Amino acid sequence: MKKHKLIIFLLFFLSLTSIKLYSQEIKFKAIFIYNFTKHFEWPPNARTGDFVIGVVGKSQLYDKLVQMTNSKTAGNQPIVVKKFRSTKELTQCHILFISEYNSGVNSMHTAMSKIGKYPSLIVTEKHGMAYKDAAINFVIKDQKMQFEMNKANISKCGLKFSRYLENLAIIVE
Image (cartoon, rainbow, N blue to C red; front, top):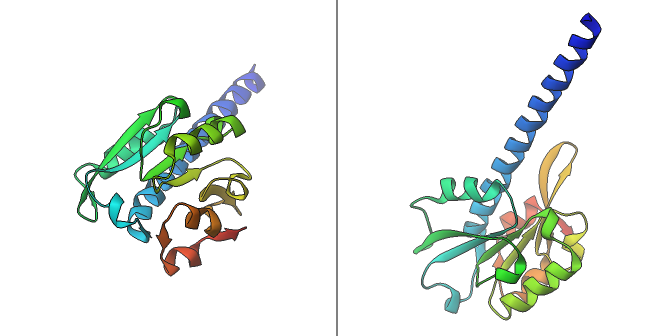
């Protein structure tokens, strides 16, 4: 009986630990995305109106970004966070986060066609996406949250990035 209770306790403890780690991961992604507003430069035609950060798919990141960006601006633009259930619902965004579960090939093609020529920084969290259409892809290396950056994809979007950001990134081509 004691062995059974010990196993239940260990499973409970491990689930709490994984919830805490996931919560930390969400927090770090939100911090990165918010800081991307400071380290990327959008062309003049994208510097009016609201600065829109879009989140595609079910993700606690949306709530964290809303909380973090409340009353904040990107340059002189108020930051607005929008939630989309799928890439089919997309409207123009300055930064578009596509969750791992919505980063399939069809979803990415839909996102690219919906966004069109509008300068949008596409951020993902699925292995290999920076080698495809994403400009930024979150990865965990050596138990640390990091991001891959594809400079060619960023250039295609008409965006410029700071050297500081380039030094922090894992550059992929």
